[in-house]
Amino acid sequence: MGRSSKDKRDIYYRLAKEEGWRARSAFKLLQLDHEFNLFTGVNRAVDLCAAPGSWSQVLSRKLRGQEEGGEQGEEVKIVAVDLQAMAPLPGVTQIQGDITKVSTAQEIIRHFEGQPADLVVCDGAPDVTGLHDVDEYIQAQLLLAALNITTHVLKPGGTFVAKIFRGKDVTLLYSQLKIFFSGVTCSKPRSSRNSSIEAFVVCQNYSPPEGYVPNMSNPLLDHSYDVDFNQLEGPNRVIVPFLACGDLSAFDSDRTYPLQLDAGKRYEYTPPAQPPIAPPYQQACHLRRNNLLSREDALSNRPNTSHDETAPPAEST
Image (tube, rainbow, N blue to C red):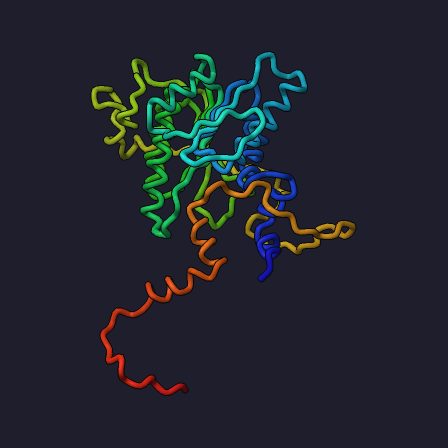
């Protein structure tokens, strides 16, 4: 298998490289915007869990493009937040911080000169384990953390977009989101694989409950309020609209395409737009390139059984 094999298996990965996006997920936000007009009237935007930066790229190109085209009366400001370092992007202020800390919310507002955001997006997801119940639970907690910091930085009437895993208890998350937003839609972009349980919630018209005070110590409402998230059951579990977005003539994310898409254009391999900065697997790659990993693997994978070292080796068959 050569380096072009993934270009055949994942058309959006290939298109992302050719168009200069840092990741294929850029197309998901573009298709969501095509359906919901997310960027209309947006001057201040926040990208949570931003690394490697493809959604921040979309925000930068779209919002700053509107500004340069004279469609914006106010300066566009974009803030990207992540625990990991991210390569710089034009027009994007980066905060390397924790979305569960109130100091991060304060720093976001400080970059907006005391003004709340018009739009908050979050494409964050955990490293999946393959255990669906565990993955869904961790993703739900990440979504609630993103929702919590959003209540600190989003203006009334603003929009929140986040990744969600559609599990058996997803209606509980919908119920929690409906308390803060009058409009909640579950959407599946065409660039998101059908085989994946991921989708995106588009939450519009932020309108928190009367008297609600954001609190970083608890991502859910306090028990003193009339609405208690933990008691939502039965008819309180809401069903939100589901919308598949993206042009029906767009590429199928689950299909394998030939390298030669156009008869008049010769295929050429394109490297990724931005290599990761200090990824956690960097040391392992270094060891493998220098042939230092194989011996360690052999020792770690060696069966822990006692045997007579003087015994002759088994006959080869």
